[in-house]
Amino acid sequence: MSRHKASAAAPSPPSLALFAVFTEIGVIHQLTSAAFQRVLPHDLTQAQFTVLNHCVRLGDNRTPAELAAAFQVTRATLTSTLQRLEAKGFIRMARDPRDGRSKRVLLTPSGRAAREEAIAAAAPLLARAEEAFAPQEVASLLPRLIALRVWLDQNRGG
Image (tube, rainbow, N blue to C red; front, top):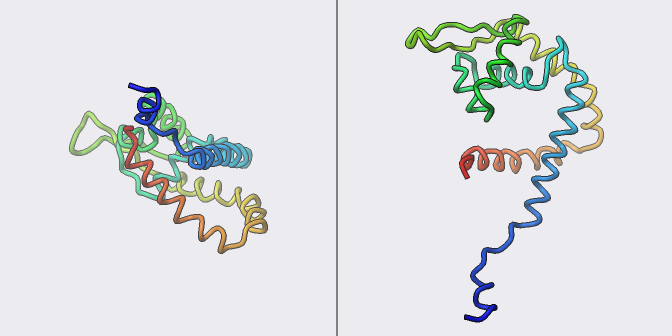
C-alpha cells in the first residue's frame, strides 16, 4: 500500500479555530475568576461562591454527590467547600428524609444574601465591561455560549 493511501485514512486534525475558541474561553475564565476573587465578600472563595450561585439559580436541596457531579469535582473536594460554607452559616446540611445515610445541602438566608453581595461587589467590573461592549454584541454572543455549554455538558464522557 502506498503512503498516500495510508495517510488519507488518518483522522483529520481538530479545528484550529475551535481550539482557539476554547483557549480564549479558558483565558477569559482565568481573568474573570481572578478579578471576581479580589472583590468577593466574607472571605468567599470562587468555589464557595459557585456553590451559592448554583443553589440560588437551580435550587438547593441537593446531595453533595449531586453537586460534585454538577461541578465535576470529587466528593472530597466538594465536602471541604461545603464545610467552609456551613461554618460561615451560608448553608446547612440536613439528613435526607428518604435516606438517613445521605445529606441534603440547604441554602440559608445568609447564604442567599452573601451571593447577592458578591454579585453587587462585581458591579464595577461589569459596568466597565458594559462600556466596552454594546448590548447587542453581548446579546448575540450569549446564545452561542449557552449552546456550547449545553453541548459540553451533554458530552462530558468523551
